[in-house]
Amino acid sequence: MNFLQSKIENLKTRYHINLNLVGLMVGAVFFLSVFDSIMSYIVPIVMTDSGLTDFQMGLLYASSSFFGLIFDFLLARYLTSTSYKKTFAIVLVTALLFPICMFISPQFVPFLVGMMLWGLYYNLWGFASSDFTATETKVAFHVTSVSILFFFHDIGYVVGTLGAEPLLAAFTYKQLLWILIGLVLVALLMFIPLVKKRNDVHKRSDDVPRGRPVSFATELLKLRYVGVKLLPLLILGITMSTIDAVTWTITPIIERILPALENLGGIILAVNFLPSFFAYGMAGPISIRFGKKKTGIVTFILGSVAISLLGFTQSIPLYLLISFISAFFYSIAYAAVGGAFADYLKESSSNDNEILSTHDMATNLGYVVGPILGGGLLTLLNSAILFTYIGVVAAIIGCYVLVMMPKKISFLEHNKG
Image (cartoon, rainbow, N blue to C red; front, side, top):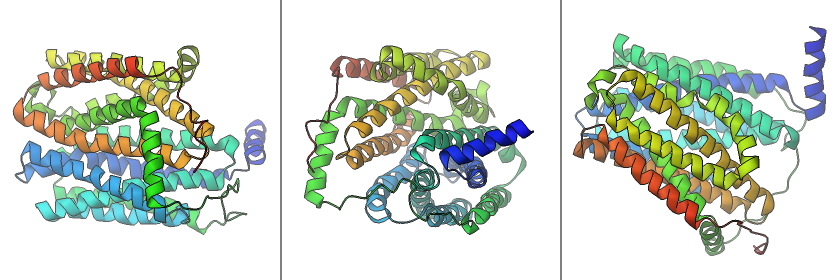
């Protein structure tokens, strides 16, 4: 016990971190992740049960990411001085309103408002998490702090996806509403003590000065410059998030095209999260040996080839195995590509906001395209062969990016605002 206490004290002293604050934030993130994963699973079902076609459902589902694109610009410009405590409080209040819009009146307008709220709170959640890390920890502990938050975020998603199908079978939508509200309230109860705790310094721990805002025209020019430089990686990022969005759109209603998988949508989604727990650890050593960009592209191609095989099986164990393998390769790809973007952020201090913005916009664009593509393919094909088409096209895109990717992308020559 004394050894454990000494290790904890060493963490507090070495990294200037309040472990109580991290514990409270982790608890809030976990319960909010369970809530969000259940909603992600249920939303397509609620929409199609209301009479919407698969394509209409895909359009509405995609609108949350479209609103996210808009909020990305607005939040980056106007929320830079807001603390994570206020931001996360808004996240929780907005999350409470989201299921109310989806369940109280299953019609187009409430659904659209619900998607707007979803896009808002999910983007605010990202801002709050980043600001929490920057405010409460030193740079040396940033990666560890982010990893802890992501770890419990993923655990929450596994729990939520596994529990969604049994909850749907056992409760009506109105009863589910109260369960979902309860999860958000538990997250709120975890967060309230965190709000009351006062940090020694009420500013970012490393006291990094903020640059002055530039004009809109200058910002567009900088975004264009960064976008052209990072185009291969951005294409890869859009494709990866598109495939992820297609998976989340189709899997909850997958029994329509694969009757053998009835009531297994939650398990399939959980299988897609499980590889990340150890794939992230393998991505570092592999990237060191082969390079981040090459590792990301090659593992993305392998994951796409694996997902293309889903169209040729009716076997439940084989379907789950293929899903696990594709998710494993995609997890390494996500980590490697994320590491490449982090390198460019470190290299280019004058373009860091633009690098972050283009990366985030590419991700959001994929989540706009994905649900529309998934709903459209489900309407046109109504067959598991759609996974084959998606996997083959994604693999071709990956090969194209591998060929066009320059050996080195440098921002050192462009350090002017």
